[in-house]
Image (cartoon, rainbow, N blue to C red; front, side):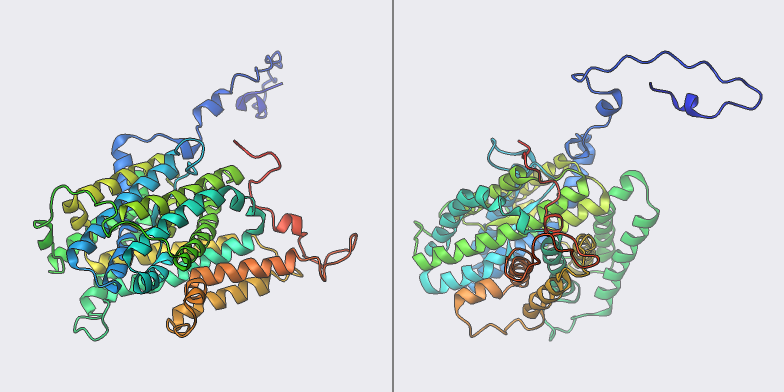
Amino acid sequence: MTHTPAERAEPAAGRAPAPAPAPDPVPSAAAPSTAAASSPDPVDERLPFGRLVAFGAQHVAVMYTGCVAVPLVFGAAAGLDTATIGMLVAADLLVAGLITIVQSLGLTRLFGARMPVVAGASFTAVTPMISIQGEYGLPAVYGAMLAAGVFGMLIAYPFARLVRFFPPVVRGTAVTVIGLSLVGKAVALIAGDDPDSPDYAAMDRLALAAGVIVLIVALTRFARGFLAQTVVLVGLLVGTGAAAVMGMTDFSTVSDADWFGFPEPFHFGAPEFPLAAVASMCVVMLVIFAESTAYLMSVGEMTGRPVGRAELARGLAADGLSGTVAGAMTSFPDTVFAQNVSLVRMTGVRSRYAVTAAGVLLVLLGLVPKMGETVASLPGPVIGSVSLVMFAMVALTGIRTLSQVSYDGTHNGTIVGLALAVGMVPVVAPQIYADFPSWFRIVAGGSISSAVIVAFCLNLFFHHLAVGRPAAGATPAAGATPDATENAAPGTTEKERP
């Protein structure tokens, strides 16, 4: 029997209670309730066009620098001229936009997690690409990328079955290290790249960055509604305006950029497939999968839509697809971008269609060089200050995940502590592995890959090896969580969602 809120309340003083109403008819199972129908899943919410554009632009703004940094670093290391590097940037934005659209909307039943995640070029691929280019040439770089993309698409579904080996202790450690390791890149944007430069860490650069951060914090605290959901975009616009007043902007290159351009497929010639190069890029794809697994499951937790094996497999297959498309379009393999995951948490906008709008904008930036050059000309201190906030939120996402972990009597403290320490080694000592073989530098030379590998292996050692585990029926230590619970991935069930 159902009652209205008024009927459930106590009767007013001196008034007899109303007679109980007749029982309501039992609702049909086929007809959803009015409340359920009026409360759609926030991930599938279709927002007004104006808000979609604003939220999409905000996503692009926070990931643009990290995305274009990959072609800029690779192009400089490979000795490419400015025009060719510009072509790499355009191709990078185009592929990132296409894969972002695939991740948010899905492509057939095989590709795309259908979640609010933004794809962008992965820094994990830069070091091995530079090594392959130096030994085999540029055609081998993109041939190996093509092969690794096919490899990724083939193993996406088997890899997704390993999701139980990525419990909160592994995912949280990985995401925390990613956030901490990216802080240095934000600081470099704020202070400058060259410590010997006269304006390195100049007071006006630091003051501008501090002002943008203070503005974002103030808006986060006091703003409401749409303004509260666009605090990062507002910070970028106000910061750029302040930089213009301070004489710290330079948009002169925008007028020289073309209005339309399309990246040339196989720009460096027919692809080549040296075995060692292909093997290196396949290892990179596995590391990208580990990163994306942590992020996709974090997004599932914060949106309330758990990511099961089917969703994870489709998301990873999109990463593999990015390698194939990038190999043909002279771009870079993509992964889920950390700062955009944090933006979803910070703003509370969980609609995947906002991310679709970001993908469309990225495609336009790739096809309209003048637009891309405009975004690229935003002042470094402004982009850096916004990035610093986003990377801090990335680390917070990892810390929140680690807060779910039981530490007493489970050895999880050892897993987290060692993985964090090993992951920070390349950050504090970038050249420590310089004399090691190239395959080792690919695996251990990045803070993200090394932290993920250590956390993954230690979790296997402590929680999945039969040697040294308590006999059946033994009572676990006080505060310990059984492996089946501690290592279960949120949202995974015996019967997978389609």
